[in-house]
Image 1 (cartoon, rainbow over the protein chains, first blue to last red):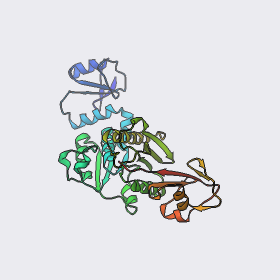
Image 2: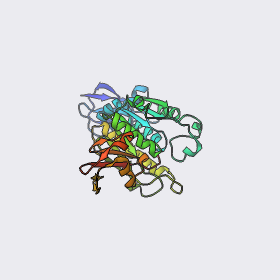
Image 3: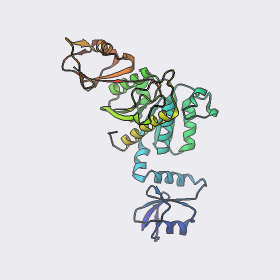
Image 4: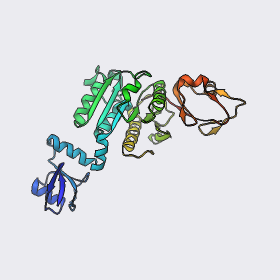
Length: 267
Length: 64
């Protein structure tokens, strides 16, 4: 039968996944069938997409890419690879969202922030001590190359303004608002909805403190506007931003973006 | 008029900036859709809101 093996068309007479693994590779390899890594043998079927990878060894570029694709199930991978997403603000929300989208295999990420990494960011943002003093856009692109070298991450060191927003965001289909400042959040929302009505916008609002994580939700507000958060928990003295809820909100935003990429427009 | 689905009574038409202030919104931190269309901030002062209008107001809080 014909199958896809490690990203290439292959012909096999093996009847099961493990037979294929043991005959062509070795029993200690990891086997992924149609996106699912399994420790139980299963029958092989015509057209299956199979990855068999040696454990703990850096695979070749082709093998690594096909394995990552296989892990996302092929139909999902095709779509995420073509997606273009802009992340506006690379703080607690944006840095975590960018990393999630990179792991998901989103093909083009535009990562925009004007600021540098500071010690106060390390409590919740996806940076390390070695990044202190670097522009967030550069630090994040550097990490993403290590996480998923098969996507394009374009870092932009700039403050998004009323004047430059359209120019900066034009080459993306989905825009993720991940600012800290509520005035900037409102401004970006207004600009995207009025000047770029064909784009989808996924915002975050309300994720400070350590109130229940269950109050953080994704809502479809209107048209192309989605809002994640609890809408209330403002960052202020006595109610700081902490990584668990910030990450929950980032996860909501990243998941809504993935859903939009997959053509689903409800939360 | 309706704000976020809730009926509000006003004697006569009112501009959007005054309405928002009176309803307790911080104009800098909101985005407003009037009858399904976004209203740019610069037009708040000249956008009249009357009995038939329906507004969706999205308020943002700080943190990210």
